[in-house]
Image (cartoon, rainbow, N blue to C red):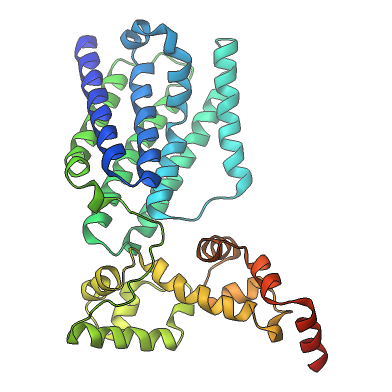
Amino acid sequence: METLDTAIRLMVIGQIVMISMVLVARGPRAVSIPLVLLQTSIAAYLVKSSAVLTAAMPFAEVPFFLLATAAPYLVWACANILFEFERPSRWIMVLFPLATATMCTLDIVTGQVPVLIRAASIGFSLFVVLHAIYSVVRGVFDDLSESRRVFRFCFVSCISLVAAYILVMELVFVGQTVPGWVPITNTLLITAVYLAISVPLLTRPADLLPDERSPPPVEEPGLDLAEQEMHNALLAAMENRAYARTGLTIRQLAEELGLPEHQLRALINTRLGYKNFSAFLNGYRIDEARQRLADPKEARVQILTIALDAGFASLPPFNRAFREATDMTPSDYRREQLKPPQVVTQLRQN
């Protein structure tokens, strides 16, 4: 059984190396680098959790341990890059790696980690993975490309679910002798995931991975008559500030316009140049926010109020979207647009 387990692990590691080389050669750098790091951490886990492979490479025990421990956070980071979901509170994201770093330090320096600290670290990592799963499921329908949406859902969900299972097993058997079936089960699950994702990754990486987080729209889409009618209906809805409705989905918009959802997706994606529905809406939302931030009459209106009025659910996603669109924070943009003499004059007139 141990020989079979080792052989499967080596096969998966070879597959990881092959996929990583393809991603580096063909995939967009902003996406391929985090994915390669994630795969490296998975390979490190396969080595670290095998007594045979660890004994064969004792010099690399510490690096492998650190890389394997970072796997849950890399799962979360890759899911964020692919789906652009909201981050948890900053203090939570600092607490998780801090707890894990503490466990790693104790393990490396003393060779022993109290069960409570190890359990807390595993629990923190599990929460990070579960948050990634939740965010992937919540935002999967925002992607306008059918093939990429299905692939991302399967890819991230499979890896996240396997990572969650492995962490649950570690949490269940923390401080105990791990049964022999657990390592081989983990290895088989990881093998199944890579067999499922290797073909599309190796054959069509450019179709499945995003080139940019928020690509600009095509200025002259060259619409045919039917598409032009859909486009006119879409523009009319945006002029009526449909974008300002928080939580608006493309399904809701399609139903209101009386259009088939798949045709509306195709129009916004392939003809207008947007890869996700949020980016399309945020373009209108940011334009409105920029106009209001540059208006001296609204100099005393809070930025949060402007963000909510434009359709954002809260201030952090508005700040991120605004910074991506303008390379400035909303506060800096307002200060740049509203020169002090102009503001004073306007306020006196009011």
